[in-house]
Length: 207
Image (cartoon, rainbow, N blue to C red; front, top):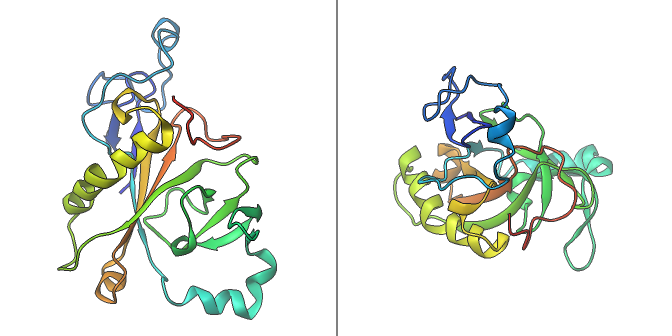
């Protein structure tokens, strides 16, 4: 489910929308200078819908790395911090990891480009949790989990309530096959809609 964020009012819109549902700004257009400079903080928002991406390949990716991809795999130190960027299974991401999607427009993915947080990156993982057993959740179910679990984690991690922040949330959920095999993990990451090349961690960024 792809969405885009209005650069004037920060509303998250359906991918098919040509203009912002809230303020009418055309997709891809910049806000007028007087509006853009009024405040660096987004106005209060009522929903956390930055974007959803389904995660697949939750079992098989280990073999890919073992066969010949290890030279390109991300590396961690003894504390778990990423010290060398490279490919990383999405399921191996940890809170505090910085990364870029390999294809931001993909509907499903199994790997990301992990990076040190002092390198340019777009996303940072802030919350990882498991949904309860049951049938495969609907998008609304996943979104409800994000609202109940990831938003409080956002407030704690960033140091500012989501409703007052210019940052947004992107989350990974399992495909149905993975869910049926026991993968119930939901991973939430934070990003800045106005800056695709972040330098440094957003932990305690208060913005």
